[in-house]
Length: 289
Image 1 (cartoon, rainbow, N blue to C red):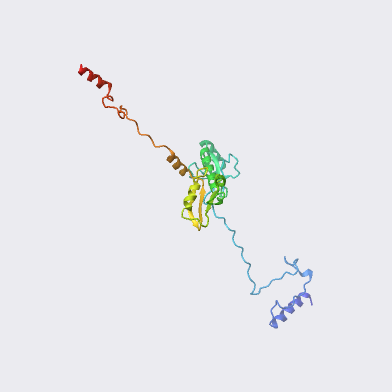
Image 2 (cartoon, rainbow, N blue to C red; image 1 turned 120 degrees about the horizontal axis):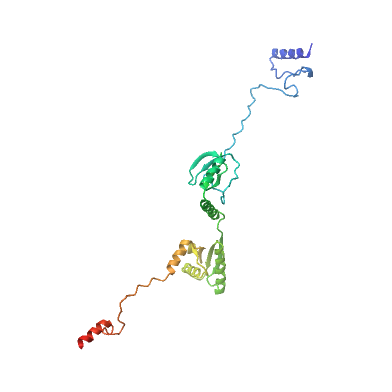
């Protein structure tokens, strides 16, 4: 009896006994009888049991959110000239209105005809987004981006300075000079004034305000002098803003002098006859004669 017949006999006997064919001993198959694409894979088997789980599908790739501001994260912008690798471009005109999708040769021809420059706005768009801009627009946009980057570059540091009420004059001058140097570096300065235990804290804020007025330069307040505890007064200084500087300059200007009258006014202690005009005096002499 051949090997294949023996295997079929094993399967029939197992079915009659009520056993599953997967629990029956695996029949021996000769190398010559192995056929099919799985014949060269030893140990390959299949199972149709109900407990097998289907493969878990992979999650779809996460799409990046589009940036609201196309200029976000850029310190400056510049013209790309004629070095454009993409064939199709999205183009906006000088006012920011969309001109649709066009070939790069048409975009370059439009750039030459209008005498403008082509600036890359969003490289992540499909196709990439370009805008026609003048040199003045590029300069203004670059300056705006730089100012925005400076404003959000780093947080302002707060330097602390403390001294007592009975500080010597030369020590106070040295500390105020140090505070001014910190302010010149665009830092904030917190000054804390301490009093003796026996001294009253009622006028500490006024004393601190008088001390701040002795600063070498002009200053502004983040928080004005105030009493913050027993025997302590504090304030936070900053550089004055442009609006505050204009207000200080307006206060320092002398008041305008009123216009002087054109006629001759009599001096103090001088009789009215002497202050009369020469024409009236000549008329009086002629009548007397």
